[in-house]
Amino acid sequence: ATGLGRAYPTDRPLTYERGFLDLRRYNRISQHAQLNLRLVAGGWLGGDPLPLERRLSVDGYGSLPGFEFRSRRAGEDVSTCSMGAIPPGYPAQCDRIALGQVEYRSDLHVRLFDWDDDRWVRPHFTADGKWVVFLDAGRGWLVGNPGAPMTYASGGLPPLGSFRSDLGVGLDFDVLGIYLAKPLSSPQLPMRLFLSLHHRF
Image (cartoon, rainbow, N blue to C red; front, top):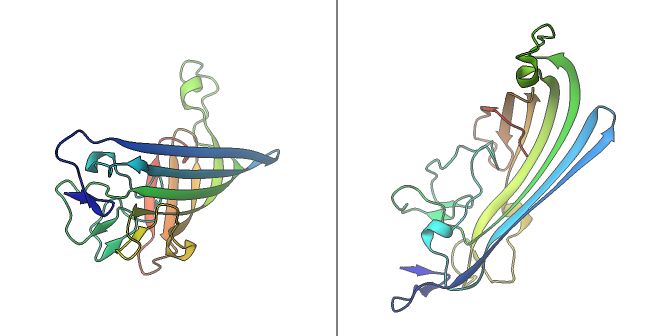
């Protein structure tokens, strides 16, 4: 097996460095509105190539909800770094990933549940509604010989135009969120509807 353009060692255990960064900023811009930002970056930092179980992807509703999670895609897939032949279980195969997310949230002034007379259930189920607009962009890549597919030098980054992106709207009632997301980088793909039991981030 190979990774980072060279073979895995067979005469000793793997030794590698792997890092992960998740920065979030929650900005209240008015009494009833927020502009929230998130930046995620992670992956191989040094040493031997990452084993398959330690590799990463940018895929699915938690990162790029406009794209179906681990769907089979023709050609090079910058979300999972697969290139045609897919290992059993469809694992992530990226050495590094980057993801940016922006969302605007504002009060809807509607309550999904309003059981003021029932003190036993109110702390668990009362939820003020908010409407949400969001934008996501991200991708993964391999580290090694820049001439290889989806591969960049250790100190390099993929061009922003190669990132997958989506745009969406939704209603968030704390206990339940209902969202629609549309791929921007692949506009031929359909809009996706998804539900969430917690905030996006």
